[in-house]
Amino acid sequence: MSSSSLQDRLGLRWPLLQAPMAGAQASALALAVSGAGALGALPCALLAPDALRRELAVMAASGRPYNVNWFCHTPPVPDAAREAAWRAALRPYFDELGLDVDAVPAGTGRAPFSAEAAETMAEFKPPVVSFHYGLPTPALLARVKSWGAFVLSSATTVREALWLEEHGADAIIAQGLEAGGHRGHFLSDDLSEQMGTFALLPQVVQAVKLPVIAAGGIASADGVRAARALGAAGVQVGTAYLCADEALTTPAHRAALQSEAARHTVITNLVTGRPARGIVNRVMRELGPMSEAPSAFPLATAAMAYLRAQAEKQGRLDFTHFWSGQNASGCRAAPAADITRALAAGWD
Image (cartoon, rainbow, N blue to C red):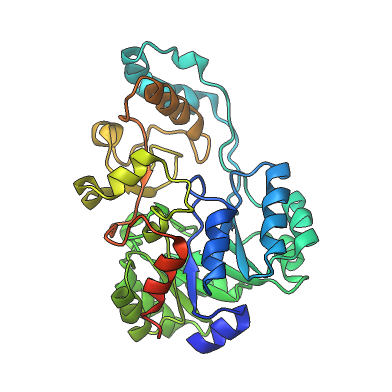
C-alpha cells in the first residue's frame, strides 16, 4: 500500500501519525492533530472506565479520523519476594527523603486491553486502533475488526513485523531504537536485537506486504522525507509534540526537553519495569539504567511513582522521569496544528 493509499484509507490529508503518549496528553492534542489533517492518537492504558468513555465520546463527536491506543501485555502474577527486593533497592532513597518504604500503596500500573474495553470502544467504533506489545487475543482482535477498525501495532525487529502480518495487523509501525517512551518489543527481551529507525525501516519494508509506518527519531520535514525515501508509507512522531500547546507535559518536562539534558537519553526499566527511553535522571545514573531490581511490568510503577511524587513535594526531581526520544530538536511551544503542518511538509 502506497502512502497515498494509506491516507485515503484513513481519511487523512497526510499519512502522518501522532504517537500516543500516556500521561503527556489527552483528547485535546489528538483532536488538534486530526483537525490539521493527520492522525491524532488517544492513549488509553491509564484511563479508568468512566474517563475512557468520556474521551472516546469527545473524539467520536469531532467527526475526524483518530487512533485509540492500548497496551496488550499479559499482567504478571504479583511476586511478594520480588516486590520486597525492589523496595529494598529503593529504600536508601526513601530514607533520604524521610519516607516509609512500606507506605507505598499497591498499584497495577497500566491496564492491558480487555473485553470490557472492547465493549466500550464498540459503542464509538474508533476508525483506527493500535497496540503496543503485539496484538490482543484473536477473539479481542476480531471484536475490534468487527466495526471495520484499521489495526496498527509496533514492531521493533523484522521477526516481529512478520509475526504481526501473520496475526492480523493491517499496518506495521517500525519502531526504531531512537523512539521515546516504552519499547514495543514482544518476541524477545534482548535489547541487542533492537535497531535504529533507518536500519529497521527498509528491512521491514522488504520483508512484509503491509504498509509500514516509520517511528523513532523523526522530528522534522527532512526526517519525514528520509523515511519516505526508505519506503515508509507513513510516519509516526511523538517527541516533537511534547511541547505542543495542547499537550499535558509538565513545565519541568518541557524545560528538560528544551535544554541540554535532552541530548542524553537512555533506555531504562526503572520507571515501570519495562524498557522505555527518557532523559537521564539521578536514579537512572545510580541504579541502572537497566536493572534486575524492579518488579515485573507494570508492578514496578507503584513504588517509583510514590517516590517520585513525594520527592516532587519536596521540590526535587531526582526521581522524575521525562520521556523523550533521542531527537528532541523538534520540540517547540506551538499549537499542535502548526507542528503537524511543519512535519507534513515532508510529504508535500
